[in-house]
Each structure stands twice: as C-alpha cells, then as structure tokens.
Length: 204
Image (spheres, rainbow, N blue to C red):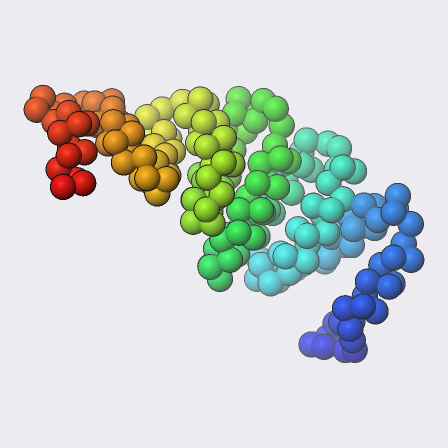
C-alpha cells in the first residue's frame, strides 16, 4: 500500500510471511544492504533524522557483517542519533537499546583510540538505563565510565547516576556514603557530617 511516497505492508502477517521466505543465513546481509542503501540515499541531516530508525534497525540486524572498525564506529554514532531521537519521544527503553547497540559496535580499545564518542555513548546509555529501570546493566556501564574516565569531570555524570541508582534501590545509607566520598574528591569535607548522622536525619 503506497503511503507518503513509500510502500507499507497491508498487514503484519503478510510482512512476516514474506520475511519467512528469505533464507535465515541471508537475512543479516539483506538487512545490512537495506540499511546501507537508505543511509546512502539520505541527502540532508533532516532526512537522516527522519529515517534514522529504519537505517539503524536494519544495520543492527546485519551487525555481524560490519567488519572494519571505521564502519562500526560510524554505525555506533548512528545508534547514538537513534537513541537521542527515542529519548525525545520518551521511549527510554528503546533509547537504551540503541545506546547499548552503539557501545557494542565500539572497539575493545575504544577508550584509548575513540575516547570522547565512547564517553558520550556511555553517558547517554546510563541515563536511559536509569530511567527505564535496567539497573543491572546500568551498574556495568557506570563501572566502565569510572574505570576509563581520564578526568574528574568525566566521572561526575557516572557518579550522579550511581547515587541516583543507589537511592532508587533503597540503599539510602550507601548513597549518602558515596555522595560524601564524591564531595571529598571535589575537595569539600564535612567534619561533623558522617553517613550515619545524615542517614538518621533523612529517615527521621
């Protein structure tokens, strides 16, 4: 059925039936081809933004065939764009999926050779994971940021997410302890403010 200069399936079952005709061992290649063709035919930032989900969804399904690291880094950035667009529509679970897909496209030594894009992706992922309630994955992403951050400024966002996560998990005392240690790292000390004292005041 034609729709806004493109064709859409009349029914999901027809779409599924047609998809089932594609041999499973060829599906990744077809997805990658479709995503790449759409991407190459985008003529402006606006058209890329409008089609980003179609591009990224197909490329991600063909990820195993994207071999060169330059190409993988490029797809990682496309996932970042898709994730940010999902955040705008408050689709945080989908946003987290895009950000995590982007992280998987990064190289093992991404923190050394591609530091800033890697940090941006991890920061975006940690925010979306927190809002969507995926705390188990969030802990791993926070750990990666704190382990690889090369300055205190880049640690602050991870610390912020870590404290919020602890508080949301009802670990109020641990959140207080972490907050005090962060403040100490920033050069602020509170002689009379112990975690137990603050905790008692918060819960009283």
